[in-house]
Length: 316
Image 1 (tube, rainbow, N blue to C red):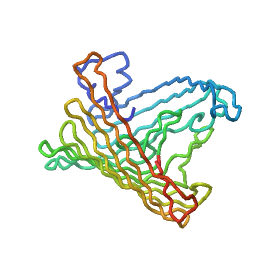
Image 2: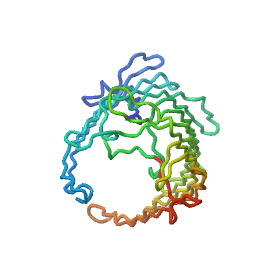
Image 3: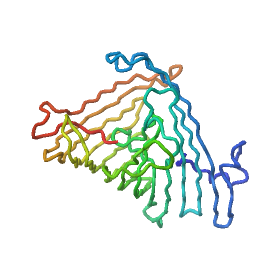
Image 4: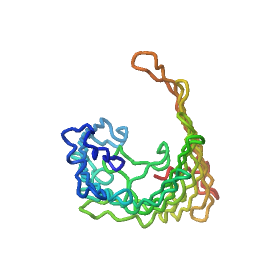
């Protein structure tokens, strides 16, 4: 919802539907100032016939996940924006209902965007986002929305986003982040920042025309209560990654490699992962079927408790 832009409704000639009066409520035409109101309801049924592969004698479990979101989006000219989203999440019939499946009422997002002065000669625009916000980078292998469970993941902190558009060289964007994940808890408006975890770093993307892109990123991560193979301690992990993605002549590809280093409880971290998703779409065939191959591998530990921690951490 926070990516929606309804400024086009200011044009009297723009096509409109039944809900558009809620999407573009004009408060001041001179600046201009407008408010957008929206919501979302998701009902999802899940059933497990043999939880834990029936090894523990757990009976079958069927339940309904209900997610209700409501949001308001205030735009003041082209320089300021405030977005607030509340969420209510229930897991009716689930044998063990807890976050991230249930949270009675929570502030899902509450952030302000401040647009910085553009640089027209370089095609540069940028904004600073402050507050509680959702984030998703690249193919979401390392920082994801977490949409499958009921409660989506959010972070508290700062995000500086910049984009540069050049018709000859392509489009470039970079995000600098300093965040703490939100700690979801059962109750009403009681979800604080997780003081034990922190995320910071840079994520850059270059788009070279239609069909070719590169991501390059560095992410730092800290967890004061990490656990690996029975050991508990402070984890300081740095991740450096490269992603290649694009489409050409029916082919599509998404390849990513990531290396991690740092320390955990006085032990060194040396971990990595490589993932790929390659496919071909038969566009001239009815229904345009696609065949693809996915291959993923990640490092682990051959000697738990040794001097080196080789377990890859997918972070968020």
